Amino acid sequence: MRLSPLALMIAALAAPAIADAPLIVLDRGQLPFDLGPGHPANNPARPANSPNAAWNSSGNTANSAAAPGNRPTDRVNESRVIFTADGSVLGYYAPNAGGVLNLFDLSGRRIAYRPARGTQSLFTTQGAWCGTVDGLRDGSFVLAVTPECARRFRR
Image (tube, rainbow, N blue to C red; front, top):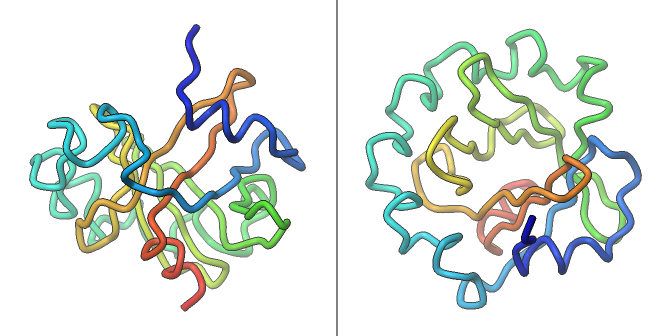
């Protein structure tokens, strides 16, 4: 199994728990083509990546912070923490029944999503390319996002 350069960079970070997800700010120009927004599978204009696609939509109750498993107070999210290299907690992630990975800030505001199939890319709730998700050998993953997307967690 070949790890991407992004996964190798992050492997050096100490993750506090296997299910927690480190977030790093990426230089989009340093990403390999297959992880960036220029790749056809990662293009925001691709219908499956659209914020209007049924499973990605903010209107889908499975993506709401009020849905079971998505609430900031839900105990399962204690092991789905999104954190920075300095240990700051920015939010949590929660998958929906359709396979979409939702990213929430600490107050439960949905920041971004990864569609269920066909891409590793993250998109803002408005549909802009936001970053990428990369898997690690232990089954956990790292979130690499643009500076603009990282700032959305702090608003």
